[in-house]
Amino acid sequence: MRLAALLLTFALSVLPLVARAEVALVMVEEHGCAWCARWNKEIGPIYPKTPEGQAAPLRREMIGAPPHDIEFSRGLHFTPTFVLVEDGKELGRIEGYPGEDFFWGLLKEMMERNGVALATGTPDETG
Image 1 (cartoon, rainbow, N blue to C red):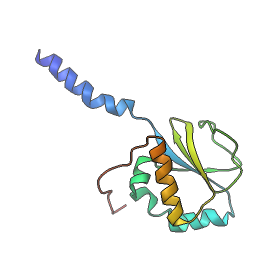
Image 2 (image 1 turned 90 degrees about the vertical axis):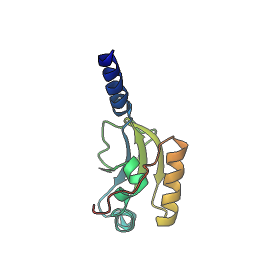
Image 3 (image 1 turned 60 degrees about the vertical axis):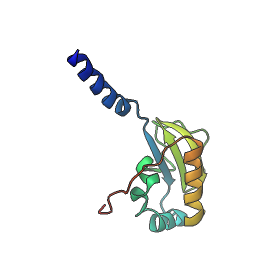
Image 4 (image 1 turned 135 degrees about the vertical axis):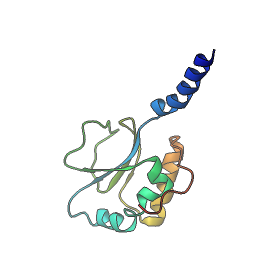
């Protein structure tokens, strides 16, 4: 009886980790892109420390060489393009960088619309 309870406790603590979907924000960019550079300056340093960055870590890809492990819903034509991906499938995208204020609102709305839960708590400020 005690072994069964122990196994059940272990299974319940491990299953959420196994079943957790892999979510990422893919930034599709290109060399010389002024809007990519602006995003890198305004958002890049703080993104990993935000709830959005914790829920969907940033992954960078070049526009001319799209990754083979992601199923995009349509072609990539603009840089930067931010694609929210879960388990290799596109959930939504932001084409272009609309500026810091609009970017956060669009990203949060896209995450909420697709059921991506934002991380809670305070991320480590040291990096």
